[in-house]
Image (cartoon, rainbow, N blue to C red):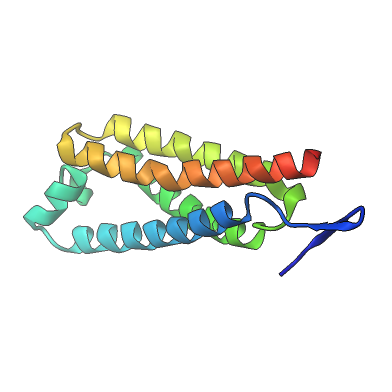
Length: 145
């Protein structure tokens, strides 16, 4: 456990737990989405229509590019969240990654067909970046005290 000496008290970053949990979720979501995309690209089945609204190879290339960028950012953000969880001075990197992930998610869901399943998926996908942002903000608060 890494502690930071501040006066006579050892202080731990407040957002550490949030960043660990969000980092693990981001990695899992990125790997699962990558697996689903590759599975759906190779198979023409109704499951891919339920998940993506269409067959991935029929998707507009801009939407597919957005999904690939999202997957890459999720994995990178997850790893950085775990690495920087107790490094309070790295809060800006984590905040920017969280905001960028939220922007990419919103971009992808604007391009996607809106149905009940897509709304549930959007809600679940937004939780880890919000946790990530909360953890980075709590680390910032710890740094400022």
